Image (cartoon, rainbow over all chains, first blue to last red; front, side, top):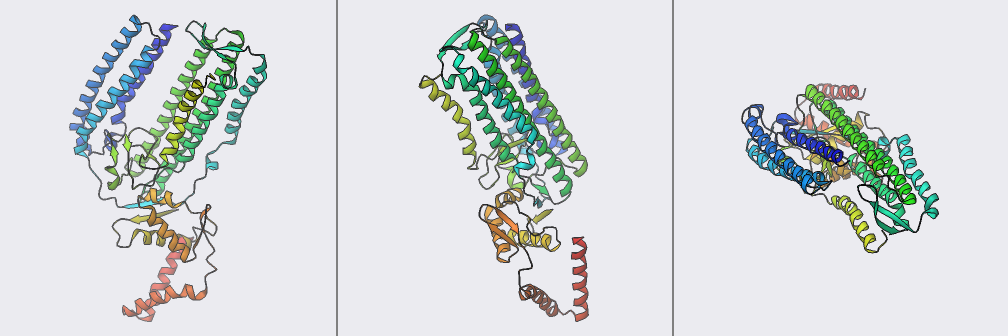
Length: 368
Length: 124
């Protein structure tokens, strides 16, 4: 079991490593380390910079994996790879990325010939991006486990196990209470609220269109918005199924005292695979749309001269107080990011920190 | 259905937005009752200040081309409500300019017909 877990975490590390390798060259010369450069720069000095980045990242990756291997062998922590390797790898990747992005920055080119911009006069409604059947399924996946929990609530013992060790023996107990039994459905509703907020913001994503090829450009951008919304919907569905299943299996463990930890692990691993698959598939679709845009219009993105200077950390972070947009297209990778100068961002972050604060308060009150 | 702005145009951006939306209404692409996107959305897409688009919307509202309801956003309103004289005034101003520029009546008529033809063709 332990080996399976370690191998699984190693696979995650490798995937993260490959993504880190690929990110700077994802959009080729249009966003090389987040910076638009000329094709000559990209193929000349750009190649050298990229090779240096790859060299240092690979070296670091090998070191981190050796460290993780030693820790998991000598300290026998099962999740060592997850808790040490992946964050270390991501931090190292970020540092290297920023260092090399600074080397690329001086080669930035801004297309000054583009000074005409267009916008579509269409109002996007959330209802146009809502699939009723999917919403019903998601609703059922929340309601059914909750009803089962309500039904079995009186039958549960007063002292219920809430935590199990790797071999499935309970090692932490709690008083039976509303919170300790209904924790997962509550988390599900909380997460669905977060997804709803994201979806609501995403449909108002900023779409800067050039005045030439406006229709083709709009078509591709609308299509990628649809892909992003469907990705969000797929993750929503997966989330309710996953937490619904886990809360039911926890119920059976609570009732019997024997953990179904293997079952839960299996469900988690399956859903990890599904998530990887979903993300891969949607990234593939986004790449297809980008190539289509390139063939139709000859460019993958239009960037305003006034905007280029508001991207920081090699196109990872956007802060522009002059820009009323909240969601906008990423410079690096696919999908959307947020304008961190927009006040609405507090709504999102406020909502996100609600969960840890809530759990902390409930723990302090001794309800869990 | 797009509107376009040109950063190098001598007209102020808000005027360009007003002219573009007016053009779409004239061509019949923006029909009565069509909702317009929120000010914030257009400002973000075009990369201009919120106030620029708000001014454009106010201008259009003043001319009776759109109605802005609080909370419901802007909607293209009926253009028939404006009086005949209100509609003729800009035409008169434009004609005055053409006369002052030294065009003969026939030439002016030709220009007007040509412009009208283009407008009606656009509507189809």
